[in-house]
Image 1 (cartoon, rainbow, N blue to C red):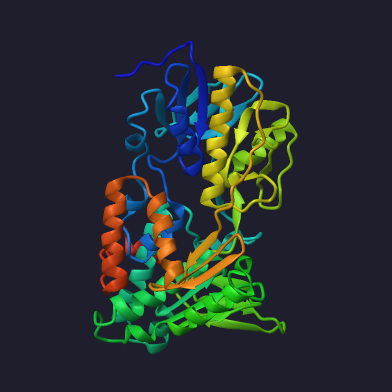
Image 2: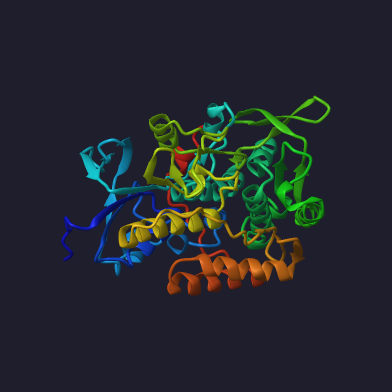
Length: 438
């Protein structure tokens, strides 16, 4: 048992994503001088870039979401609290939170790191969430897996050909990496893994529609890589509609406005939203308290060292911060979390002034299907199998724990070399989940 000390510098970290976890691991190396409390509303660290693989039956939830306590068990000065943060008192240096069961707690700090991440944005149409849920949490991914696999089961039970066709039509809204990756894997799932599983329909005839509001998918990768990804997705049966804005979503499908202004209806029971993000409400709380600004996505604009104006002891890192308009990706979160921890350690140990954070851009990548990916890094643009192998190495490296890496490799081999999908159990109540779709 490790007892909390009173003489050590107290650091509270909000969030167990890449920013929060890596900050905690770094501060865990200074047990004599620093005491860390990591507070999170989940008991796990989530490798969010691979949520779509849980949703499509490739990986299990445990492989991308190890228990936070297990990851930090050797850091004896790090304490983990399961609770949801509800407010801050920056003057008194207190964080308020609510534990499961409703008990309110107050945590005092000398330094604070907030890494609460982002949620889904529906661009002013929150009513779409009922029919086209996003995928930001592990629970979201498990629900999506039930919806996707449940759609095939419902199609097998359906006698009306039009309704069956709607069950076998999948709509993905958003042509960024998440939308591209899940659209590609739904197509692969239907044409490979489920090819011989159903008797009343041909799963190879499943329709996967990918809608993007801009002129091309994966726009940040450039025209050439975007074109390659488009070609690869179309080869496996994904229908891509660019310059297409979703005008309405309900239980029966989506209405989409094209470039010419015409609106077309697509009957589809399963819709997945991958089109936008909105920072945690904690970002606005901190902005209101410090006078910091928030961008259109609700992300709070930070100082060069990731701290807030007038509060050098408060750091905001990861997806919920805006630092030079950097994208909300795992590498930004990881590096900013490590920098905040570095500033705190140096301040406690040497009393040194904070240094500006310098982001090291390692590039961007997206897996298009089981055999190809695209990669853009420092002017180098790759695609195909070489890019896919690099995608594999990077994602294995970022996974937490040897066991998770090893089992993920086995799952990827069985899925991408063979046709097996080991994670096809529907673990939620389909009656409840699909009640409004049927």
